[in-house]
Length: 498
Image 1 (cartoon, rainbow, N blue to C red):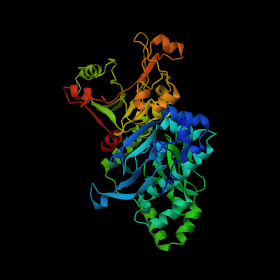
Image 2 (spheres, rainbow, N blue to C red):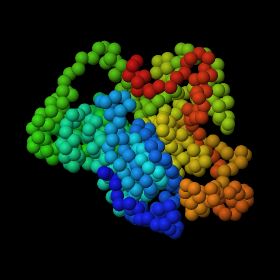
Image 3 (cartoon, helix red, strand yellow):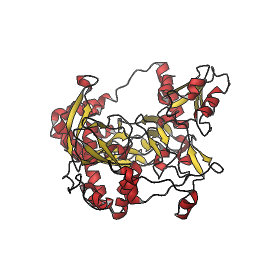
Image 4 (cartoon, rainbow, N blue to C red):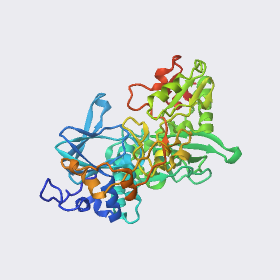
């Protein structure tokens, strides 16, 4: 089973190794490749969690991004099986103590690909994404990166290939061979994945992110299409040796599966039936489709609005129907009342689309640039996919503000409103999270002058954005609108339906 490594070395006392927190972690095989500095990072940032038998640790489809390391117990992996019913699941296997899971969502921002259930009393170490990425990118922790990459390729490749229409229904043994010749590629925002006129030497499957397909460049650039999660492009390379007919550029960070042409065709050559199926599916993609004038106009307008404003990246948007709006300002007043800091999150500015206004309130992007920009783990996505700012973790660095493509984040001054000061001893911070004994090591409140003497830093400003009225049963702006003019929907669905 992928990720199933040798159990962690045991010692008396609950199964944990004796000694310092660093020694405890060094007994876990995954952490043996970490540098001392990164082990310290895990000690400071990670959190112990306990689970009873049959308890869910993470659920398929939810937006959580922690890496989980199983210290004690046994967990089962399950995936939904819609062919057998809406609530049916398929058992994939079990992972023993010393294993890890969740690295796919941690690295790609994709929703969880499977549900993990505790099969016994289990103790799990949850590592936040920002701490994981520090370890992953540390030049002195190359072994850790190699271990993670090896498992990520094996898990991601198998799961993804089986869901792509091009390979649907093909035997898992063949998919495994395809995965062996494929490779995972990470592309940063603005990079060209393929270029017009270049040889067609591979085709690509999109795991996460968005890209635009263009012809020409500069003032002559024409956008032909957009590609997003679970789509693919460059498949014409399988049919002929013609050069690329267009350029594909990433509009945000993308995780791709690159399948080289020559080894792939050689593999298909050894499986004639599979080759016929795949190539026939590729040909069908280029058969002309009849579009009504309304469908053609909607598709063209959606492409234009995506080109002008990049809303193709958005997950959902706050829409105001200006034909219904009476400008009573009740939405803004409701927003102010809903937040203790009395800072409004809604604004009546944004992208005009006929009578509709896509406001500058948070779009909850599928791959949030603000979350990628934050180096302190203060911007996270909850299980429902809502992007939120943790005020306790925010340092006021303002890296997120320019990163947001829609201008929804602003820095609010805290001068005159008191300060937030945080100091912590790494060892006691780590031990405070251990189930059963954590309360003995909880940090005690300190006076402001004592914190200053120990090097505590005062936060003078804080990032603020729409939080979809987290903690409320409704959204204040929608609830308080007397005209029914406000709602939240996916802007791409909206634009495609106009």
